[in-house]
Length: 252
Image (cartoon, rainbow, N blue to C red; front, side):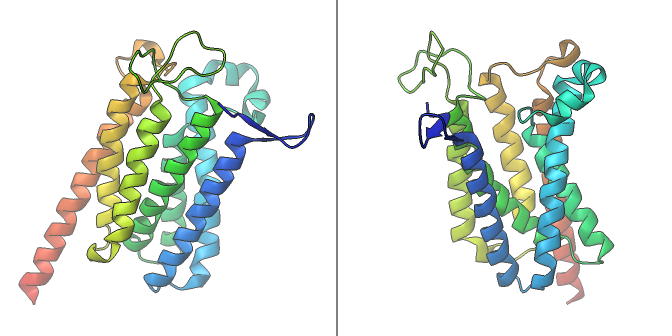
């Protein structure tokens, strides 16, 4: 693949880092446009974005330590914390959502529309970010002999390109949400559908992921235990929104 873009023989740019910067900037652009469309005060945007990104970074590192590097962390905490590698997507997602919700609650601002914006951003940013994983050759799948499988540098056999198994559906979902976003009139519906969609996708993709941690002899990966919880929460939010809609209709 292309883990580095060489400007000279000794100067290069990490493809993984570059793609993730593009993902973050693209997400910020989408968040800004949707903040304006929903007529949310633009003064909310910078601090909301800051706390979401910061808590996402903290969450990604925290989840990685808890599920993959706990013993090493106890022995060499600074080394683990300061490593440029070692992040878990679910930690970033959950941390970012918590950071956004806490910020909005402290300011007594509505939650549902910003959560819809966050879900839309995650679809695009995560789709782009997984392309970075593909180019870097990380987060790949198990051995595979299908025609679409990929042999990354240093490997003796092709593997499932699980990075693209995630990226392509996410990008398609983003395009559909973006095209039909005005149809989602009920606040919170996009966020709920995102939880159901990504939770289902991730649960099945992890069966093809290589080197996934199974702490303590677990049957599934940590992500596969989190995924059904996301789906249940998404379904619960939809049921709540339907009940609220019916209550408003009955009162009207």
